[in-house]
Amino acid sequence: MDIEHKIYLDYAASTPLDERVLEVMLPYFNEIFGNPSSIHSYGQRAEAAVEGARETVASIFNVAPEEVIFTSCGTESDNLAIRGAAFSKREATGANRILISPVEHHAVLETAHQLSKHFGFILEFLSVDEFGRIDPEEVKASIKKDTAIVSVIHANNEIGTINPIGDIATVCRERGVLFHTDAVQAAAHLAINLEVTPVDLLAIGAHKFYGPKGVGCLVVRKGTRLLPVITGGSHEYALRAGTPNVPYIVGLAEALKLTTQNLDTRSNSLRALRDQLIDGVLASVPRCRFTGHPRERLPNHASFVFEGVDANLLLVMLDMAGFACSSGSACKVGAPKPSEVLIAIGLSKSWAMGSLRVTIGKDTTKEMIDRFLSVLPRLVEQVRKNKL
Ligand SMILES: Cc1ncc(COP(=O)(O)O)c(C=O)c1O
View (cartoon, rainbow, N blue to C red):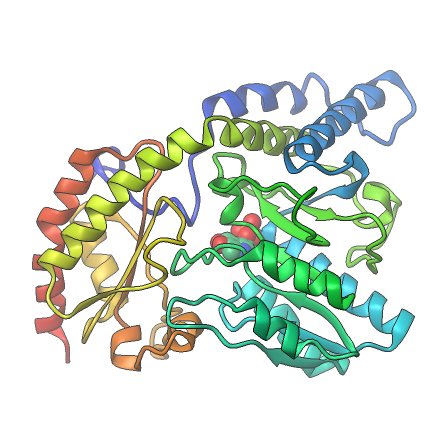
């Protein structure tokens, strides 16, 4: 089937670049090509673009421009936050514990694991409820005097659950511990006001909200000390060396600006379609469970597990039938492994191996959902029969 006839239902993985974003990026590839660090007017024009983008992002999150650090992606932002804060805090105070949730994206999880395995930090985990939510009271009880940083995902990429980030941030602030949140999924759908939410570090990536791939940012609130991960020149307030990617930074700011306009109206229409999808799947597929929180979830996110289903096989069959979706499991050929997130919310392996994530976006229509619902039950049945 041609790609034009396929139905894309994987907006949590990536989104198409908005035409309006492309438009504002284009002059910065050739016309305004100077290095923002150069003294001459070519450099000044490029610098003005980067600083304009910084101001746009800052005003959206309600922070000062110098608190916005551009990076190459959400993953790099998470790395800079966790590594940068852990090393800096340990150097300043001796604190060497890292406290995270078990439902973090690998960008946080693997970074924390490496700091524990190779750099002598003690990694501790919070628990989650059946929906993958973290209790702020447990965060409060788990912070120790030598906890260097706490990291809790804002909205979960696999199961869509939104965490009570304001309450968790407040608890960390009260206990005097740095708090990082991975808002890579959240930024596409939720209003984030850091004037009222005392988050110290917040990571985003542009390709989740119709911006380009390969650019992200980390908000670093004033007074938060970080050891840079990439060293070199003094770009980005000496927190991230390297000539800034001017067109992509301009694109990130434009995409974020467009995304945060009419957020409520867009969320409401996404939510209506998403609920049609969820109700349809639950009504038509036997031995199926919905994952994540029923209400506190991203408006575009539906996730399920099917008992006795090989998620990878289902994804291939869906793709052949014209639907692009994803699963929560990090299945690799020969080494199938259920997702840590699904195990953390209490699912057994036979359920967790059969996960399906369907995420909708700006081009999704009711007809597309109807078509999806008309093929999914049959495909699940076929995958179950093919099971060895
Ligand atoms: C919650 C979350 N954090 C981090 C990332 C990584 O972001 P990037 O692809 O920009 O590196 C993703 C991407 O899927 C994500 O969903």
